[in-house]
Image (cartoon, rainbow, N blue to C red; front, side, top):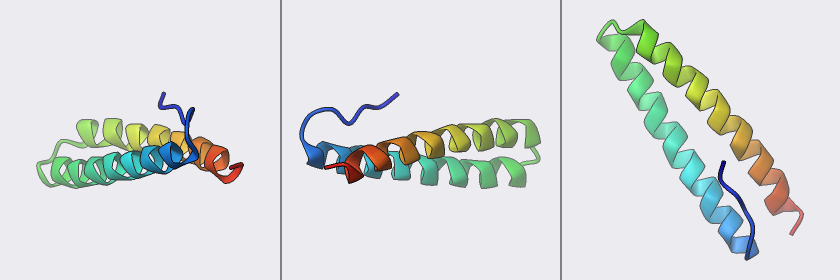
Length: 65
């Protein structure tokens, strides 16, 4: 997925991008549920879980700097 190679401040940028994408996905889940599309909502819940895993991994990498 996204890497944090390079300058340490790049890791912060990656974390902010992941946070933005998770926020957007959460809004989409709410929209899907309001529209009665639970299948799409569940798919995006899984996507949020994957983004959160990547955020955790990147966060640990950034903390090492």
